[in-house]
Image 1: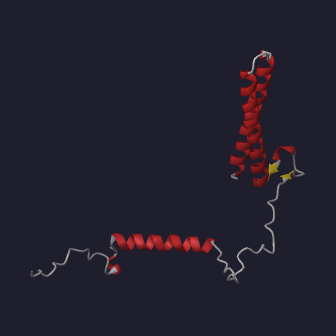
Image 2: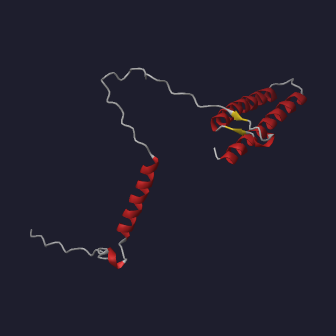
Image 3: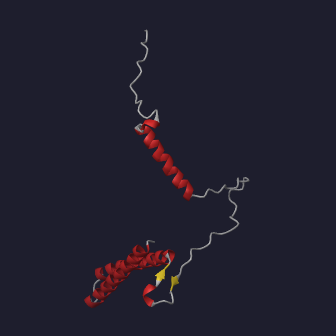
Length: 146
């Protein structure tokens, strides 16, 4: 069996001389990717990790510092109170857990017989109020861009 020599495939010759101002699509994409990688590299700091000495189960020497939970009250006025992002995250997490517990207990109360309808309505109203508070926390996070 004799093979025929491969016929060269067509390829773009545009962009081989960038002085003409025309570049190939591949060159354009390569430049864009290179620029994007350069932008990312400017904002990232690389730290060389020490090589392990064979003791993989060793406790880290320094524990990770907890995030700062704070509420900032400037002296200028009461309208400009701001909260740190970790504070909002922590509060939101606890409120959602509380709301989940409240909804479960409301469902359990409504399933059991002999419970006054007023109690069930009050429990549901409290859960609805908690939903409004959660919405306010989410709005504050969005406002601060957290």
